[in-house]
Image 1 (cartoon, rainbow over the protein chains, first blue to last red):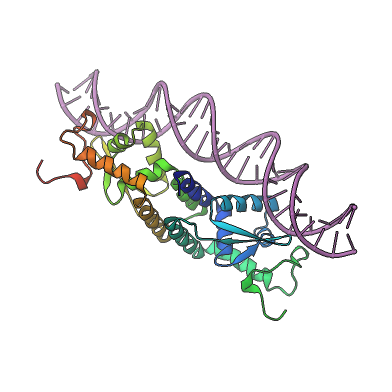
Image 2 (cartoon, chains in turn purple, cyan, green, blue):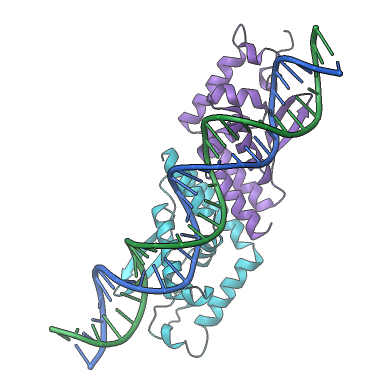
Length: 131
Length: 131
DNA sequence: ACAACATATTCGCTTTCGCGAATGCGTTGG
DNA sequence: CCAACGCATTCGCGAAAGCGAATATGTTGT
């Protein structure tokens, strides 16, 4: 990992929106529309921050038709991977971050999803075998 | 630790000069003049970066007469402290960073220090019992 | 008291970053 | 084929960050 890549790695973590994104992903894969819904932020803003994290090698994207899923991936550099694991653990213990998780859970387990999430693929931890 | 403090923490790590400073300190305390000598950078530049790290709660300063010593300190937040420990370990395995350590060692163990370091207090790992 | 030393801080400039608004692009359903 | 959807990217602006040069501040030796 070059010096510039390492700088980009830490700068990518130096923004509360990007940290919230990382925490909401956790060990799971999350669709972009859920980030927009949980954070109440504009879609271009979320998209730009995800691009930033992607360029820093911290998340990976997977397209499923028109739906884009994102997940945290361990960076190729072992040292960076260890740092990132500690970061995610740190975020997991934060009450404000946990509120985001709660909002995601409330959303996904609601009797009826809002219109704009009606056909959205749920994060796998919320997928029931019977729907 | 507030959201803003956490952002500042990561942004503080998002600069190669500040990372080199952290690595050169390691577990030791280092005088400002050695940073200037090893990096070959201007004193105001080094000073400003140290101030940045200080404000981020990553280093602490100790004045000894006119000499200023800096050392890495564990942040008060336990999560931040764990992340920082991983960061320092990561830096320790980096060849370019190790070159800085080598330059510091060469400097401190030289038969004669350069004039501007003549009276400077050496990092404790280079202090011999007999001088 | 004062000059010299070591370091911190400010000023002004340039570069980089974050964001709303707008737009571009790939996919999908009719 | 085309409109609608989901998302990525660009534009332009304001804010933040990095740095050289200059200066301020505390300490020390004469």
